Image (cartoon, rainbow, N blue to C red):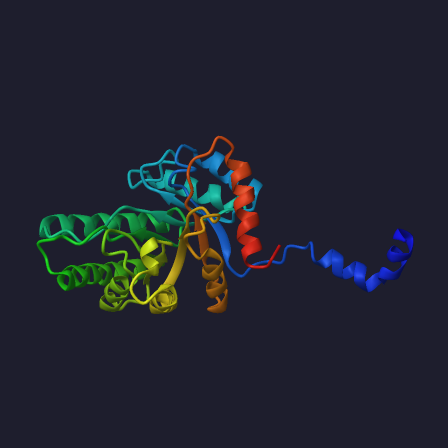
Length: 281
C-alpha cells in the first residue's frame, strides 16, 4: 500500500510538498529591540546572535551595554557604522527615552535639544532614525494642551531629522498617551513626513472603538512596530501581521522580549512564529 501510494504521488505532488516547506520571503523585516533581551550584549555579540537567528536589524536602546551614545567620538561613530555595514544586520534605529509631555518649559527645551544631538548620532552611526516616546499626561494640564505640545516639539524635530536623512518614530507609549487616538492627534499636530508612529502592541490598542479602528487611525503613519511575546493570547498578533501585510508595510517588526538564559534559541522560535503567523512557514 505504501509503495502504491508513493508511486501515485507523481512529480507535481512531490514538488508541491517540497514547496510547502519553503520559507517565502516576507515583505516586512524582523529585528530586535535591545531593551531586556540584549541589554547586556556588546555590539559583536549582538550582531553575531542576530545573524545566527535571521534577525535582520536592531534598534539600539540607550544606556545599554552596546554603548552607542552621544559621547562617542567621530572615530568611534565611524567604527559602529562600519561594524554594521560589514555584517548582515542593519542598524535600523536608536531607541531614546526622550518624551516632551513635561509642563516645565526648561525641561522641554532641554529634551528637544538633546534629541537633536541624538539625531546627529543616528546619522553618523548609519541608522535610519530614532525612537522617542510620550510618557504620560500631566494631571495639571488639559489633555489637548499636552498633546499639542508634544506635536509641536516633534514638528521642530522633524525638520532636524529631515536635514540629517533620518526619521522620528513616536512610540505609542505612556499612561494615557498610548491611546491611539491621542497618538493620531500628536502626529496630526506635528504634520511632518519625517515623523511617524512606532506601533507598540499595547492593551490600550483594544480600547475605545476597538483594535481595527485604532489601527486604521495610524496605519498610514506606521514607521516601525514593537512586539512582545507572540504567544500571548490577549493581543491579536496574527491580525496585526495580517493588517501590516495588507497595507504593504515593509519596515521592521522589532521583538521586545525578556532576557533568557538561552537567547539564540528563543530568537529562533520567535522568528519561526512570526513567519508562521503570516503563513510563510
